Image 1 (tube, helix red, strand yellow):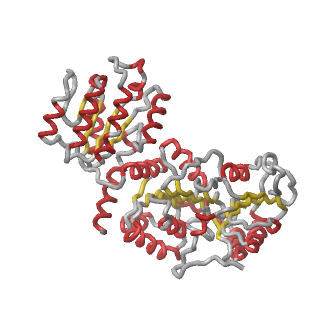
Image 2: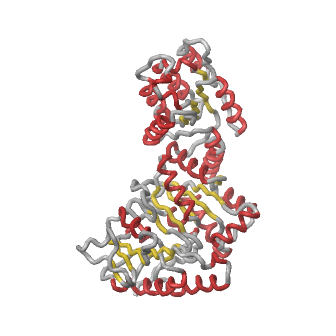
Length: 485
């Protein structure tokens, strides 16, 4: 009989996750067109089994070379590391009991109507579930989607990316996980692991945070949290302290249930007590977490840190095609506590020598107007601006029609090539260059260029407010990190 260990400080050991070699989907549903089975089988290279009491064939799954469909998990002759349980709530208890006897290490329970139902019966059912697990099988859920692990090809939905990344995501909401993974593909964000843990009856937020902190495949941790159980607060503080003092991995968190109605919804959603917002904010500040206000901000913050690292954004250079848009950018940048300083005298002189068209301005903010179509000069101007020791980053606006030859003001067959070269100068100078490619028209060209730049770790935005509020948050995180060293 194998027993999974808790360490002496009350944290569950999940290190076996990196070594999962076999999966069983229990309760594949013909009405769902075997959705969860098909998805887990799509890219998983290890052994995968279906468990159903009455099915003998599943289209496209049992190829006849090996029996992959069993009446019960106990009939599977091989070891099973991970199971996805898709049976109704009233049948989960018996299934978990069999999983414990089989030696399963990790189980996802998809069914809801446990403590999330808000009934005494649901609470008792969840307590019985944990009792039957006998500390021999770790549980993600109930009311969760479990584990997405691209390196091993473990996925609960179709067309999840197979490219592994270095961003971990923990969420109580499976729907938010789906949005994060699919949106991340478009933004150039790839995940190491994603956990949808639902009610957190066994494995909870604290356990998963501790796991990702110690996971060598994860460098950035992102979280959607509604609440934790009161008795876990002390352990959470210890885990956060360990990260701040030792691991120093950035943790970006979206806290749900901050409003009165949000707190009620959180209790209905995952039976979570959202808690006092002021207490949570104090906790985040004390342990240097980056708090954001939306899923989009969570993803954009992770992308900025992943592409350009932890740094301070104090003095910003602005590069604009439109003088008016440059003015708007200056207003927005300063409203978020950053400066648009003049260039150093020697840099300013060199930049002025690169401007030769009327209607342009060589000072910060830079207004290049139609000189954009002399693209060799644009490379030189951006190179000089980023070389200024007083500049921390450069923000550049560029409507997407400038990547469509039909809209060129002057012929320049090297325009796109030179602009891509200019965008790469941020990494050459180790200073963020952040393009705003407005969603004005020519969407196919915007999508093409954005994808190309994401592959080069250059984050593209369509609206300055997608990222400007995040720069002071990253700056504050960087300062507190230095203070803690």
